[in-house]
Amino acid sequence: MQPVLKVQALNKTFRLRAGLFRRRSLKVLNDISFTVSEGETLAVIGETGSGKSTLARVLAGADNADSGQILLGCDTVEDDGRRDTGCRHIRLIFQDSNRSLNPGLTVGDVLDDCLRFNTQLTEHQRQLKINETLAKVGLLADHQSYYPHMFSGGQLQRVALARALILDPKVLVLDEALSSLDPSVRAQIVNLLLKLQKETGLCFILITHHLSLVRHMSDQVMVMHRGKVVEYGATGAVFDNPKSTITQRLLTY
Ligand SMILES: Nc1ncnc2c1ncn2[C@@H]1O[C@H](COP(=O)(O)OP(=O)(O)OP(=O)(O)O)[C@@H](O)[C@H]1O
Image (cartoon, protein in one colour):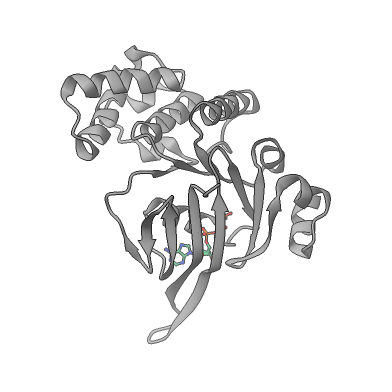
């Protein structure tokens, strides 16, 4: 079966100021390759600063790699730093949904803007799509008139999910998206994500420090250290028999 997402040899280096006239290079992604099939979840774990969020941003098009390819099915989404700006099929959700939502816009406006800028749908079709997407994430049609400050943390993550799903993506990148939620709300959102994945074949890239979530949600796990992949395989196999010392250390915490 052809993978939905194929990432080949991604590299990214930041140039940092190291004095008045000097700069130093920090290689944050070093030859990163992986594949994700339909309905699969790949967890990405690693110590802080290992490059996980940079990878998330590059996958979602919020930043460019220096070299390497990102392919969705047969389509090349990014090739050596050149992005297909029309691609809306990889969407990112991160930890602090509140900060990513404009406080002056209602949820209906946020979702409608997404559709107006990215599709040719008529006003009536957009309204139907908004209602359908809100129902999908467990929100009511009435929530369209709410502003972000009127939602709880768990509801805000549902709004972020609705914004990500409204363009029918193939891949959702969850960068610590469940971390700030209390355990019962987190469990509800996890169940919702797994249900959506089963219904639609959506792929998840799950970036988290929560090893129990990795165990529960992922099919594969990729361990990063200083921008490199140090271990990559089926989640059960990696947890039961971690080969790299980095993985062994992470799993004992
Ligand atoms: N825009 C930037 N400019 C310069 N350096 C950056 C930039 N963004 C990230 N870095 C550096 O790149 C490295 C990797 O950062 P990144 O946020 O990807 O790590 P991470 O694995 O997600 O960490 P955490 O688990 O703490 O979120 C860090 O050393 C960070 O300081």
